[in-house]
Image 1 (cartoon, rainbow, N blue to C red):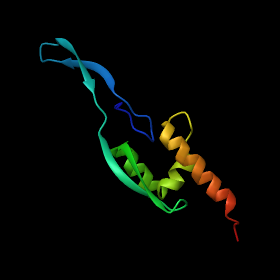
Image 2: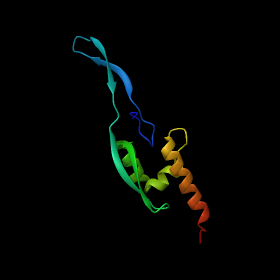
Image 3: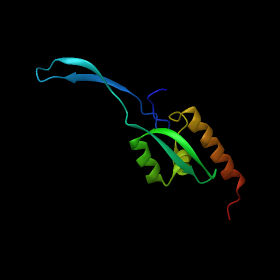
Length: 98
């Protein structure tokens, strides 16, 4: 399983660990990934995703999973998240707005 957020695309970064004597050695900066179950209002079911903690805060700030996916670009979403976005868009297209 790749160390990549399914919603934001945040992945592993590479940099240097710098000692007091300015000696540099390679290190990896891992994203803070958590497995969460989010509720989709349009699909009326829960969805399990592996996302970063920052993405979880962004989802809550935008008003839920559906609102986040509608505004998100396809290039940063995983294949699973893109499929969810298409399902949600299809549901929104079916429901008439009063």
